[in-house]
Image 1 (cartoon, rainbow, N blue to C red):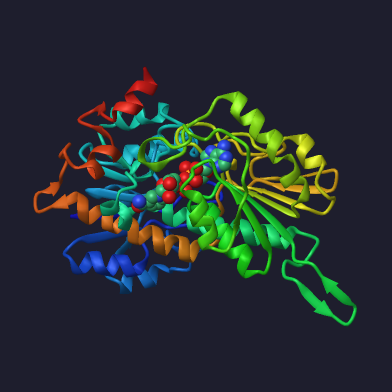
Image 2: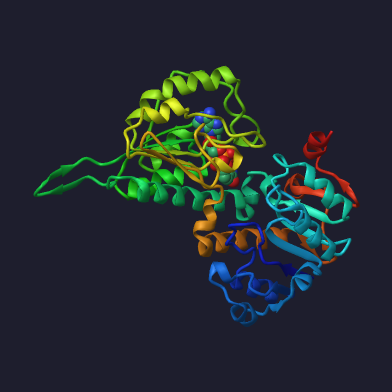
Length: 384
Ligand code: NAD
């Protein structure tokens, strides 16, 4: 099979879908890989490194002319790329081409029509089921882990205090207090990172299973008087709650937020805007000099004050809302992404080309378009 890897063109993106290590493995398995010139530059991989790994560096048209095109952000989808750029990329694809990448179709279903109109077979890795068999392909987990780590570092860097307890001849400094909201993959990594830096970390998640996981990485689980009996939905994800629930949650979180030096917010509900857990009033109640890092900013944010990809300082509290945290560690984020997408590609391909069998949940759940149609039931529903 011919595999193509275009350079990522979404503003701020530094990752690359395949690293030379994965190219080497795929080339060894008999695939030919075309990598667009400069695709790995920002992740620390030169064209020469790809060449040495067995790829053929080439133009964007070479990369998009492949049988299967691997990207971080899938061409023509996701709401992250200007429409014209998306059209230009799709114009370079073959009608039967397979595209694999992140499309965020539950938040941005409309561009999926464009993929269908261009007759490509598109797979969105953000729809991968969280089942054991799919773990090696799970880009959401690998990238969330990087995101949580980066969120903790950004918070530590912005805070006007050191994180660890420090004893000097001038006295003893208490450790910083970190509150993590949402203890999924990103939240747990943020807890672990803040703990390693010496902070005291408290965390809350509406899923009951999160308690043990928070404790296992050294956090203290915050008990809130909330009815979370319907918090867990399909696939172990959080279920959207009514607005009254969130209002009550904000109320009971008030003291926790006010006492924290750092709030790292990672709470998300798949396919929904992120719940607002921290209001402007709650930010104002924090000590001047403290920090909020809103790691849910790409889905609208957990903090009412957040401005995507910007920092707002309110009453001395710095609220920062990066939408692409993994791009802050492009070498490792790309390495993990590349391993995941290479494993997905292996799973997808058999001797005759891509398998499109609807019985396999890994294929079925990620397949967006085929034969000129939007085939994913949930995305079709959203498109009406
Ligand atoms: P996510 O990014 O969708 O959400 C982040 C966290 O926010 C979740 O833990 C969620 O429960 C939490 N949340 C939502 N609303 C909240 C609220 N109002 N208050 C506080 N927290 C709130 O989640 P994720 O990190 O992608 O993980 C989702 C689930 O998938 C988790 O149960 C995780 O353990 C599981 N998972 C399973 C596998 C696997 O292969 N089996 C792999 C990765 C993750």
